Length: 204
Image (cartoon, rainbow, N blue to C red; front, side, top):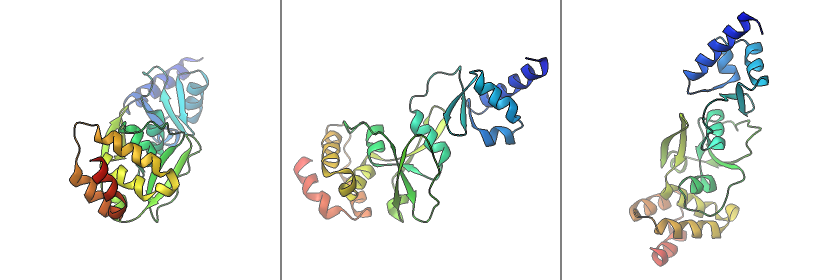
């Protein structure tokens, strides 16, 4: 490796560190990293490919939620929802094998090869309400609040299963903080109040 190549790699690593160690290929190139340098860093193990076109410095600690981070970077207008949100809030025993992502009706479907993504289309207040911003591994990740997620699970019960919604409600009940008013509010937003109310009365 020539002195110039080593210098280019050092500069590229510094640039990655300025962005929490992670950049898309297009953004890195836009910021001045030559594609040849980028791919040399990947091929020599200095960069880890998180997803197609998304790279992270290999000497950083492992990501805690690599799939959520990768999807959020590739689809910043989306919101983590349903089973993935239940898992994030630790109110399910299900292990999501794909990232459940809410997109606003009318938006373009995100093109993400990996990790696998299951897109659900939300409209109006059902999309915009209950979004909570979180920071995971230095990346902004939008996740629906637990109460909004429960309402969503009842709304999409025919697609994810009523059992998943009922289990999540029971596990939510075991938490120290239970917000019945928020549950009712989001049930109305999602137009499932009549569906949820008998279960809320029985469990809460």
